[in-house]
Figure 1 (cartoon, rainbow, N blue to C red):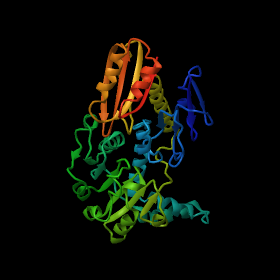
Figure 2 (figure 1 turned 45 degrees about the horizontal axis):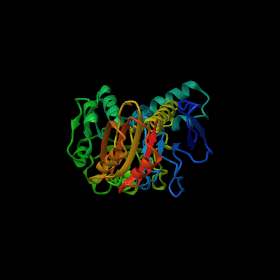
Figure 3 (figure 1 turned 180 degrees about the horizontal axis):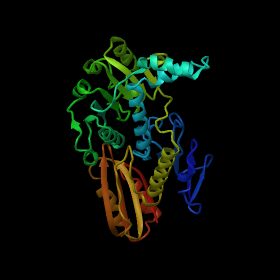
Figure 4 (figure 1 turned 135 degrees about the vertical axis):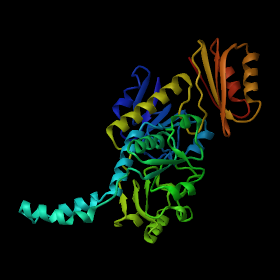
Length: 390
């Protein structure tokens, strides 16, 4: 029986994916095979040797020590796209709130409680409504930075609203390119996109390469009077640089899901309390996706949507399955196959994939490998972890 340790409140729809005859799932469980969590920070926590995988019910994994886990052979999963619709809809709200005088208008109306006569109130509002005039989104250009699951959905939404859409993504995958609407104008660099966009929305992950990608230097390229929206991660924007751009009048508004002290109290900032994925549907989708990935890995050794190991999947060919992770150096797979051959273990099927400094292998064999065979594989130089599946 597999043991799954949960952190945070995980949707029951996700937890129900773990069949009770195969899994013990609890917030307190000894010798867990896997973790499933949302925002709980694992940095600094000792991880048991039994842990084989961690599934994050969400896209960001900055709460997980990914590099350390990679060296231990622990596969880290996330759930890209599971909360995409929730974020997309909040981006729409941000676009509308930044283009129309909705928030100041609501605040103004809330202060009219002293007026008891409806006619008087109507007359006053008719005279004052020009204070809250804005502009329409139709015909404006939206620049989308990051064209993955969320960015492509935002692009489609903006096109449906009659906006022009420009896109920039330095790491656009073939899969994402196929998903992208043909009307999106590709920009070759961030500066070009900033210079030509009335609104710019960010949808890139928080990586070392994207840290503070919006900074004092890049903000020199923004179209004067444009609006910046950040519903991705706080780390990709230098908030102090944004404030400086607002004060110079280059940026007109900043809409974000990540309040910081320097942003509070500014009329040109709309800061939300990190609610991008806070919908019932998004939490359910993320939990189900995380659970399914964890189950497929623990039961079949397949890897989908890992942030630190390659995507590897192979149908079961019968018999028994051996999986192992190793440093991505030459000769390791050959040595493992030699161990199997020397012990008369016949290979039925196999797949090997690499990603950066690590590789991952699935080997189906006819008979169950003995403990001594598994120990010999584990002792092969550069093998990080190994296990067998029935």
